Amino acid sequence: MVDSKNHVIDDAKFIRERIKDLLKQRGVSAQQMSLELGYSRNYISQILTVRALPSVTGLLEICRYFEVSPNDFFGEGVEVFAPPPSIKMIEAFNLIRKLDEKNVDVVLNVLGALSNSGGSTVAK
Image (cartoon, rainbow, N blue to C red):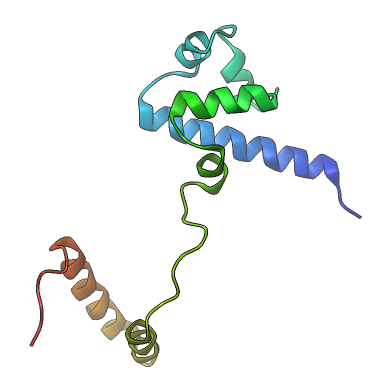
């Protein structure tokens, strides 16, 4: 049996956290957002304190406000269909799995350095 009350609470908490993150990224307050959307000054605050849930229309307006699609809002911008890893990536992963923790740290540092340089450094 599915406990719908807990699902609603979990959904409300997810929406609250997602809006908080987006507000922080945009650098606006909940009150400012409420007013810019044409709602009462405490509308978004009520959502952030899980005293209210936005309607579907309200949620779409929130997505437009942050310039994100509903898919990005709920998917946290994560690519849903990531390409499969290449054979070389699988080989590298299998080799890394055999290393001790100290050597895994070394590999991570090298990968971080390569990533920061745009991958332009090629070891020979």
